[in-house]
Length: 464
Image (cartoon, rainbow, N blue to C red; front, side):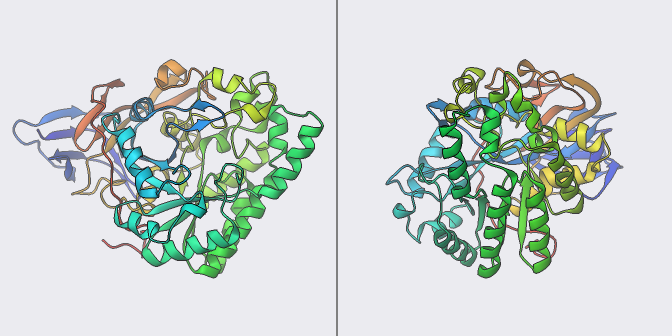
């Protein structure tokens, strides 16, 4: 059945205007001011509301096992995402020891089958390098997984890439049209600080942040940018949390590095003062929350275009999981929930506070994520022929954030008790309502794996 959405203000990355949207066969069929609904179409009245492309959260962890605690599964993660106006997530496939990337992808897709309210794609983690072959990267790119995550830390867990391995990955991915994204922290600096903290029995959440000061990120970002520059390939920096990172990314861009970057709401809105409270361990994540002085450079990086994406690094544990490390940060499963609050927080504290425009918000949450990660023009836009993934947002609706409101896996939220103005009320996935008036109406088998195409389709580098 066709769906006709009338009366709303359409917001894209470049324009805002009152128009109707006709959806047919799961696609955007027409957008215009003078459209009339076809016979038999379902009418949705969006008067007084905004209609945006569905949000794409490109950094989401699902079912991550840390310190014996497992984060939210596909069912709860995608339910929370849909209620928050997110229509596509990109999550990670991390192979076990002696497992190929292809086999790990098959396992991951089996976990997601029939348990997703929205669409999902996969990043492949380049870990356990002794098990990898050069054929794996081009094979995955051909199979619709063109992005690969590397780490400059976590050697003990088998995640870290050496400088040589990372450079090799840059060359291989670049040759075949892939993109390497990098978690940037200098490992030897962290390990040196950790040894001292353990010896001194300083093991609180505040001490964990002390083990990873801002220059630890800055040093690693600098090293990664130099390698990408020498290799002549694009690079994507995940979860930038510091002013140093933004400054270095700006310098790299001036030198000609094709560098993309994301930051997260918790780095824009929370600071390390949260770690000092009795529940400070529940705010522990990697990288850690920073002093508030780092927030202004991050907002400026968004405004200036040095940071192209806002993503969540969603890693959702329950309070009891986090409490296991209340007296020893080495026992804390690191990470914060965020996929359900991404859009409303960024609307309230970004657009509502005058830090970014509504068009810039769509650009950072939908359009550029789709272009950078190979989803354009299928997703991230309300153009004719694109998937009818959209969210209806009520800019005047005030909601107080609670775990019950989010309906995810966690029984706590880092934003618990915050009241925000502007909240998603209905979410459509490929022409079918998944959420109507803040209630789930879609099924858990609505979402599907999305094979992605050419990455880094920024203006001037697009195929369409």
